[in-house]
Image 1: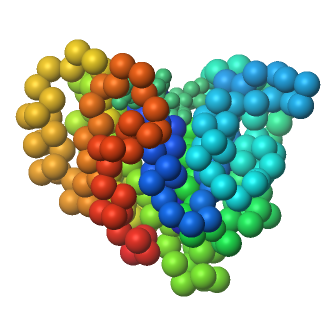
Image 2: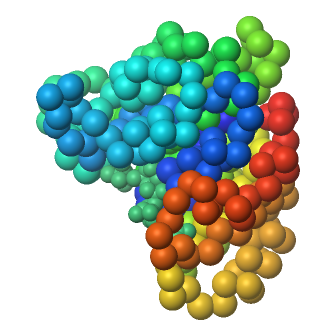
Length: 234
Ligand SMILES: Nc1ncnc2c1ncn2[C@@H]1O[C@H](COP(=O)(O)OP(=O)(O)OP(=O)(O)O)[C@@H](O)[C@H]1O
Ligand SMILES: C[C@H](N)[C@H](N)CCCCCC(=O)O
Ligand SMILES: [Mg+2]
C-alpha cells in the first residue's frame, strides 16, 4: 500500500499517482480520502483528482469509497471543514479507507492533499492518518505503507524536499520512491537541481518527468520506473 505525498500542493501528486496506477498490473485502485476543490453535481460533490485516479483504477469502487471527504472550495481542507461544521479526524480517514476492499488490491495508492503535514484541525494532521494506517497494516498484514514523494521541480523545491523527508522520517514512515516532476516550465538549472536532489535523497529514484505541454497519465508514465519502487514498503 502506498501513500503519495508531495513537496507542496500542485507538485504533481495526481499526475504521478495516475501514471503509477497506469503502470501497475493486476487489481489496482487509487484513493483521495480528502479533497477540497470540488464541483457540485446532481450526484454530489466531485473532485477532479479522485476522478483521475478512478480513471486509472479497475476495481469498480464507488466515488464515495474513493473520496469520502469532499469540500467545494479549493482551500485548506480544515478551513473548509470549519465552514461546514465538519470534523476532520485522522482516525476517521483510516476507518473509511479500511471499509473499502483496499486489501484485495495488488496495487493500492492513496493520494494526500497538499503536502505531508496537511492540517486537519484540532492538532491533527493527514500524516497522523498515514501513521495510523501504517501501524494497522503492519499489525494485521505484516506490511508497511510506503511513501512516494513527488518533488515539484521549481525554485525552492530543495528545501521543501528536505523538510518533507525529515518529517516523514521523524514520523517513522519510509520513503520507497521519489519522483522529480517539473511543474515550472521555465525552471533554471534542472540538471544541477536533479543532481542535488539525488545526492540528498537516498530513497529509490523513480524518474524525472519533464514539463509536459499536455500532461497525461500515459505520457508521464513513459518517464517512470515503476519497478524501482521498493515493493514491500520496508
Ligand atoms: N510535469 C508536468 N508538466 C506540466 N504540467 C504539470 C506537470 N505536473 C503537473 N502539472 C500540472 O500542474 C497542476 C498540478 O498538478 P497536480 O494536480 O498533479 O498536483 P497535486 O500535487 O496533485 O495538487 P493537489 O495538492 O491539488 O492535489 C495540474 O494542472 C497538472 O496538470
Ligand atoms: C485546493 C488544493 N488544490 C488542495 N486540494 C488543498 C491544498 C491545501 C494546502 C494547505 C496548506 O498546507 O496550506
Ligand atoms: Mg492532486
